[in-house]
Image 1 (cartoon, one colour):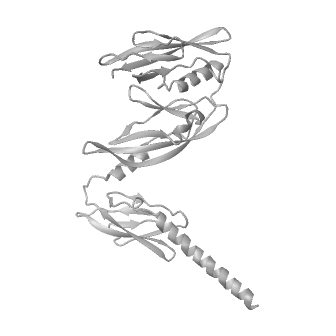
Image 2 (cartoon, rainbow, N blue to C red; image 1 turned 60 degrees about the horizontal axis):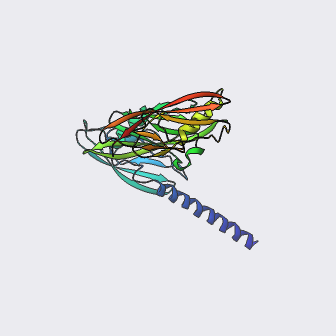
Image 3 (cartoon, rainbow, N blue to C red; image 1 turned 135 degrees about the vertical axis):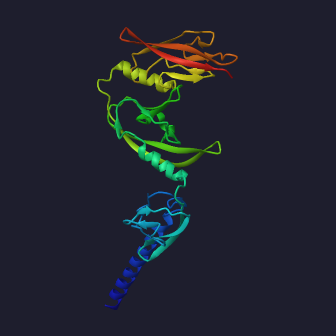
Length: 306
């Protein structure tokens, strides 16, 4: 009987210690980045990783929590320092936040968060989508979550020579999810300063009525790292002549200006001869032949000087 009681007591003790450990982990996961140093507007704090965090303010006249984690900010005529206490059960952690005076410019983090709130990223798409380059003073840059797996990802990011950025789905046989990383930058003292990033999950749908010609075009664009059939270059690059997706396809190439972009004798690469200065435009044509029917695919190449 005594042994059973001892086992129960030990179990309860371990359970309580485990709970305390999770409390500490929740607070440790809360960093200075999560709690802003300076604010001019309302903001939201994290819920907590291992347990729900309750927040309180040392000066509710200027900063108060309308519910568990949404902070209401009331600016004053002067800057006011506020201590924010994060609590999980009996464990606490404190942060200092300055509520900037009325008329202060929103902080870089606030500007980025406002821009992200306006940013429209599709939750699903099966066609090319123009990505927003800038909102207010915030510049957006886009990255694939797994850039080293380009051919396995359901999409690619395409940078056109007019500086527009496109989200281009690869031709899919089944629906697939892809993760897009969006990074926000703000120009401060003529320097692009990284502010924050967010990750979006997008469902890429199956393109209707995919033809063999579509499959070869998609394969050629990936193989030549094209930017929506228009790209800049100043060095030699490979040209695909066969298709892995459509083995019976034949791909042949021609150049509108062989003095600038010459098709190699083996027909498998483009030899670049950059101009002395400036940019020279050349049209490459991929002649895709499937079942004795040939379809031309035009690609605009801008050859830049060294």
